[in-house]
Image (cartoon, rainbow, N blue to C red; front, side, top):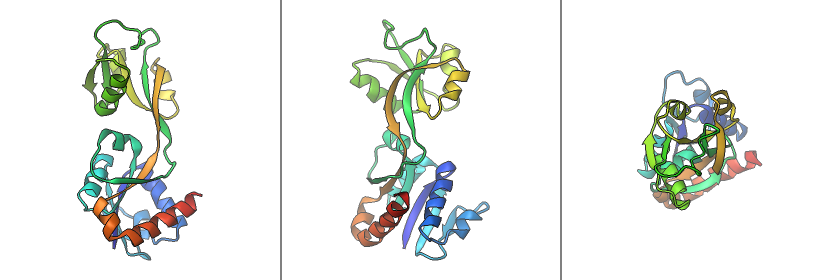
Length: 207
């Protein structure tokens, strides 16, 4: 049996649509109610629903053989897994943004960056040769430069409408991100045939 961890929310719904196109038995996923562990009615697969960061944890510790998770989460949490497939779903990007007159790359002296993704922000600015202070924010990151908590933010942007509505502009794009498939390292050896068959199914409906 293969165990597959799905990131709850939009990626979960998109994943279920892929499985349905593959001909899998996804009735339990489509009518899950409050259930978190569900069986495929056709294939010998078990699905369970988790938050993105937990998806990596379950795969890294071998509780899940396979995980569906955003690249943003992978960049923030480098644990033990193989990244094997870009699903090209949920496309967006990491950006640096602030108020129009607050370009962090032009500020002299101390620069503060607000973000939900401290590892990504730290690495990006380090590569730019900038020693910045990272402030971890869990809620609406766009609020922090408006209230003077930080000079700029590092966040995910899909359409840019939220930034625009709050009067913020993009000063740099760090990288593009999308949903990925990850595999437990031990599972890839022990269940290689089953995992490759699953990946082949997913690739066929992506193409």
